Length: 137
Length: 297
Image (cartoon, rainbow over all chains, first blue to last red; front, side, top):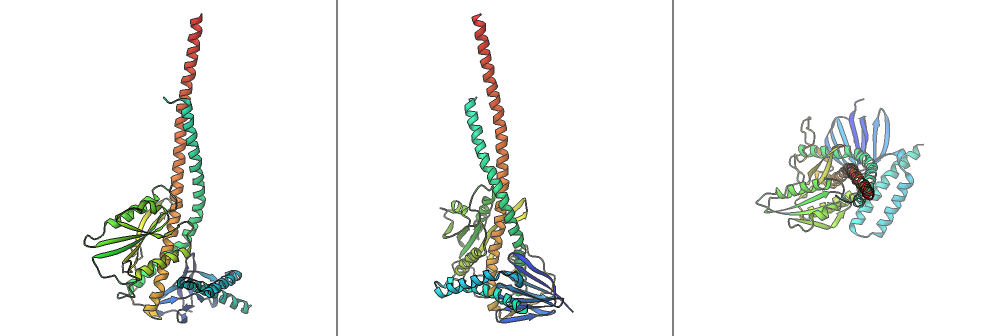
């Protein structure tokens, strides 16, 4: 099967670098699948679930805000964070979600609202990936 | 020649100073280890971010959006903003001064025909004493950010602050001044323009070998840039702070190591003088006793 070079770079590490067959990105307007030989493209990525296939195995992970550049045989994803489903601390994500929700309810200034919303999106992205992992078990 | 007591006091005071510099050396060397690993972890992100943005810029010649991308019309007044990353504490050798010197150079080299307004946003408190009270710069004293323990949320705060003021036309150009680590012993202050984005602004970016095909923006160029630009500004600021922080620790370590060595040399020298003075005193005493004994005979 044909592959392309996938690189997922988070702020604290190179999360993945290698050949992949398929990748699904959480784009602004919904999920977007990318296969080899894709047209040159720049995609805005929002906090959500990213899946990439290597040797037929699908890897599930949560990513933060960022963007992706697709250049024929090379896909570069640059995002705030990237975590595998099995690495996510569910308790922490849960409590972060609750905190963010509470802050949104309190709704102070506009900037704080935007911050809380972003925090909520990050927590939701992590939880979404882990909840799916549980179902698969 | 100074008296014995004076020299002893001097030796003790040098010893006390040496204790402090030695302790600071140890502290900064352990902090450096942490800062270095943080820096090594962020470096790929920092580099890839610059390379990718550069790539997008080179591929899309006619990008202009919401004033975040386009070069503003050359007016006779240019408002520049410098985000200066220095340290919160001194005693780091020339580390802070090198950064400030670079800012000074950049301020001085403005076009003669335009009237520049320079605003400085400080990351690290050391800049305050240096830039305060000067007529050619204005310090944003409401926003002085600490530089110790670099965190993403702080970079986000700074990014939001500058982007908001950039869109509000308060700034025409935004630069970040930081220290780049070339290797563990050698750093270099660097100035980098963050906004507006133009082609060729990243001098370090690698050459492109692929054909220059214009990318498709999904969902739309406006939306993508609206999303990417704040992300990019935040990432760049974060990378710059992390990089500088590691350099600061390293600079402090070297400076304190030098200070400790100097103190040791000084103590050696003073001990020598002290012994000489002591010996002279003893000799004199013996001579006095001998001559006293002779005269009584």
